[in-house]
Image (cartoon, rainbow, N blue to C red; front, side, top):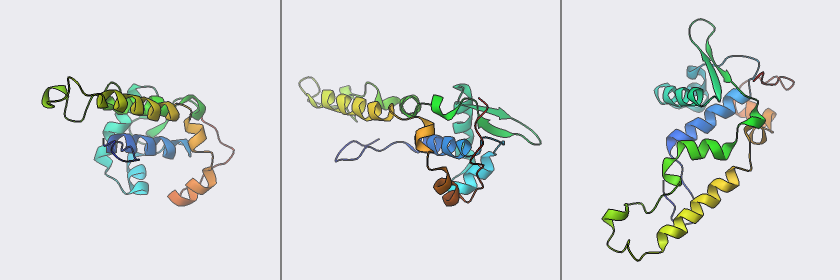
Length: 159
């Protein structure tokens, strides 16, 4: 993660986690596969396997193996908080001191930058906590067109 300038950067793991949730939320009436998500976004299915595993461990998705298997949301999109997901997938955002660590910086004892970075990180995640998965997929039609998937506008997650 980099926090210099006006942008915050998230890890690829967090990026893939959020993309996976969006894709699955757009198709609540069926199981989707990791391969299909990987193809839609042009990313590695191997990377997505860890993402899906963690999403399952935290109760965001249900997984089923075998013929007809795949993943689907375990909870309604309005019950999946984006800030909570990012906080969980970005361990360095909470309580991060500096990028190099306290022991590797000669001014750490008197530096106030760490406090500023912690406050900025908290504010960043705080804004995300104001959004749910339902909020970020509210433009279902546009997202489905961009991902080349058919979305049932009337379908809702069973979770």
